[in-house]
Length: 366
Image (cartoon, rainbow, N blue to C red; front, side, top):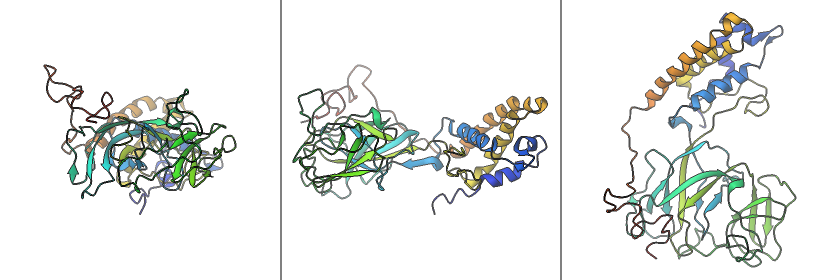
């Protein structure tokens, strides 16, 4: 069951803190309790919990999977429901899996994005063509990524590989010969919309164009190709090295940390009610959240004597968050360092252009 570890609602937190003498006047007016400043207080507390420099396991999120495309470095993400992807604060770890192969299990390699032990298949790739890490990846807002131009030439100001009339997009899972020479799978139409291929096929004779500021998730058919609008402020990924037109096709499986929940009355998940839970914050850690709410309430008190308690109590609570970290930080560390080069500039370091497939030598050993 989704979010089954998080069932405690804001109403339950409010019911627990209202009886406290110093807190009650902050949260109650003549007509009963009020939503503000309680929702803002809860958002402030959750933001502080998330700001700790530690990746919580209960806060992990899997990014939508995507596949490498020929000569394409940037990938605006589209979820399985056709929506843009927003639910990421920072990348944590990842792998890439060679998809077009008869090998079983499929070969895989590391994607260097940060920390933590990666998921894996049973066949780790470590040969002259694949190095550790196989790729590096970073997240960016979609508006910072590169997009092609439908019908644009590959010799103008663009970076090339543009689609046009009759261009063919071969699905990575339909290919039997590795990476196909597809055009770039994301374009900017003449009205500035960002479009991503979500159904492979053959382009028509007219460039796909939607009305200005088209709603994310809107689709347009171009021949037998379907393009989907992505939100400029949603999340995309940039990778290195840039895939060639002949290498293996890789599926990226990345894991990250979610942003802190926002309980704001307009933008939050609950919208003017206290039935929203603390998800994904687990019920078992509720005391940490409740104690933070109590400390933060002092900040909003109109009584100077009560307000004076805020700084000390908030500092004590923030210092106590290390206990929450320690609860999940008892396992053996499985992170590792990859040597950049040997002490005497020899050995298998990543600067050895002859032996490392990376940004400086992306197509080695081809």
